[in-house]
Length: 197
Image 1: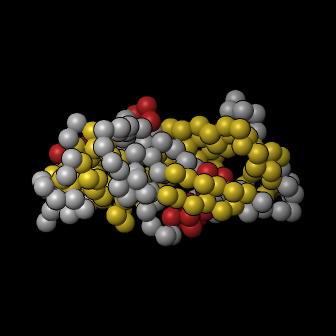
Image 2: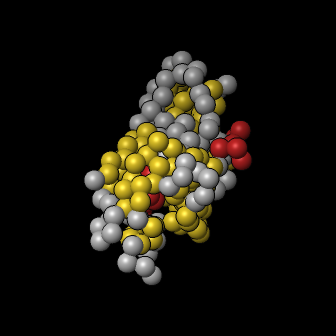
């Protein structure tokens, strides 16, 4: 390994700033309730705006973004990875086909909640009460559309210097991530904040 190559701790943290791609606008939103899990399958970084990429991670790693340990798990994706010295401006992240999530949203005086089902059968309604999921409240599985499984984030400035590894901090916010659309509960993308030094 060249002395000019350093570990890329920060890049994997940016990895989770993808969009699930399910949009909802009909009703009030609510938080993920301890479960909002995706599988990261590949993380790549580019110094030339995405013409060429260096692979940081390739495999299968579940990340529960609603967990307090999500940042540490994301950082672990870069363990052992090396990048050439330089400024990286683009990150490409590929995720798996499923999202496993638990949560609810209030809509028109009722609670719409995840029920352990899949896609169109992933939610139920507890009519006439708010903030009260039913007894079948459980983690549901949603299919992430193929067009939304790869995300490219550009305009970054991650500097990898000889002898130094960048330090990154990542925060995930899954508050307000669930909404009601067409009477069913749909997940949206979490807010991801990443800082580097």
